[in-house]
Length: 428
Ligand code: UD1
Image 1: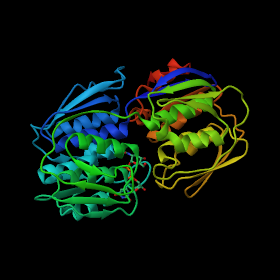
Image 2 (image 1 turned 45 degrees about the vertical axis):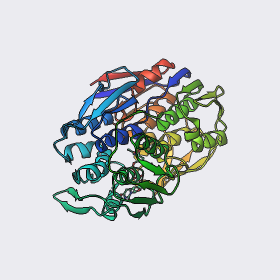
Image 3 (image 1 turned 90 degrees about the vertical axis):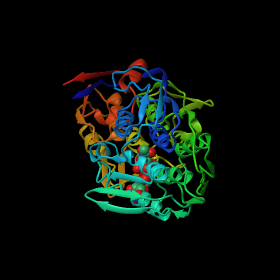
Image 4 (image 1 turned 30 degrees about the vertical axis):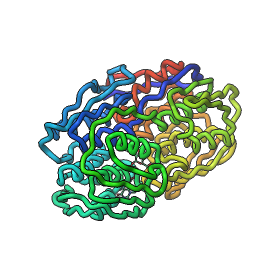
C-alpha cells in the first residue's frame, strides 16, 4: 500500500498537461466490441480503471495491444488497439465490476453484437447505491430478454429492435450503453432525457467513424439509425475535464500561477463561472486555462449545486468544497447526483475545516486555515479533494488508501511536483 506525503503551503507555478479522459476512454474501449475490425484509440491515460477495462476485455478473449498500464509508467500519452476477433466469453465477472462500476459499459455492445451478455450487478459503492435499472430497462425496451440470477444480469436478444426510451433521469453510462446497443439494432432508437456530457458526444463521434448513424448527441434527444455492421476506426480520446478542473481548483487553492494545458475550457464553463464568482482570476485560450492567485485574501464564498452537464459536475464537488474553506463567509454545497458523496467531510474536519452536513447539503464555513493531518482517501474524487487540502494546509499531510486516486488521476504527484508542490509517494 502507498501513501502520499504532502508538505503544504507551497505556491504552485508552471504548466500541467491534462491527460485523456477516463470517462471517455472506458466507453471508447467498450465500443470495440461492436466490430471485428481494429479500433485504435490515442491519448489513452494510464489509470487503474483503464487497466481494469483492459483486464475485462482480455478475459473475454479480446486482444488489446499497446497499453503499458501501471501507475509507475510515466508515459503520459499512449495508444491502444483493440480487436475482438478472438472473443470467446460474454461475461463481466463480479471481481471486476466491483472494482470498477463502469465495467457495465460492455453490456450494450455485447447484446447488440453477440445477442448475449452476463454482467455482475454492481451493488453498493462508496458514493451510494448507484443502480443500473435504467440500462436494463433501456435494453428491455429494445426487445432484449432480461433475467437476474445470483447477482448477475443475463441479457439475450436475437436482434435488438429500435424503440423510444425515455430515461427517468439522465444517466451517462446508461445513455452510452443504449447508444451503442442502438447502432446495431434493427430500425431507429430514440433516447429521450439523454445525458449530454462531452463524453457522450465523443462516443457518438467514434461510433459515427465506425459507420453508425447518430443524431443529437450532446442534446436531450439522441436518435440512432441501426445498421447491420460497424467497422474499425481511429479515435483521439478527449481531454479529461475533471482532471483539468481538479488542477484549476488546486492552483486557486494553493495560490501561484498555473497554466492547465490540453483541456477544453468550454467543457468547464460551470466551474469557471463559479471560480469567477469566487473572485479567482483566470484567462483562457481554446485549449488552456491560466489560473492566478497571488494574494492571500479570502475568496468570496459561493453556493454550488451539482447537476447533470452542463451544470456543475458532481465529480468536482469535493474539490470545490476544499476551496470554499478559504471563502469569506459561508458556502452552501448541494449534491443532487449521488446520495453519499460527502465522505471527504469527516477527513477535512480532521484538518480543521468547519463543515456541517444536513442530508445532501454541506455548509462550509470560510476563513479556515487547514492544518496537516493523517487522513484517508475514501473514493476517487474525494481523494483529489484531500490532496488539494494537503497542498493548502500547514505542516505535513499523510494521505493513505491512494489506490482510489490512481483509478482516475494519471501520475498526480508527478504533475504536482513539476509545478512546485512538495508531494511524495511513499511505500508503507
Ligand atoms: C458517470 C461517470 C461518473 C460521474 C457520473 C455523474 C463514467 C464512467 N462515470 O457515472 O464519473 O460521477 O456519471 O456525472 O462516465 N441512476 C439510476 N439508475 C441507473 C443509472 C443511474 O438511478 O440505471 C442514477 C444514479 O444513481 C445517479 C444518476 O442516475 O443518481 C446519474 O448517474 P449516472 O449518470 O448513471 O452515473 P454513471 O454513468 O455511473
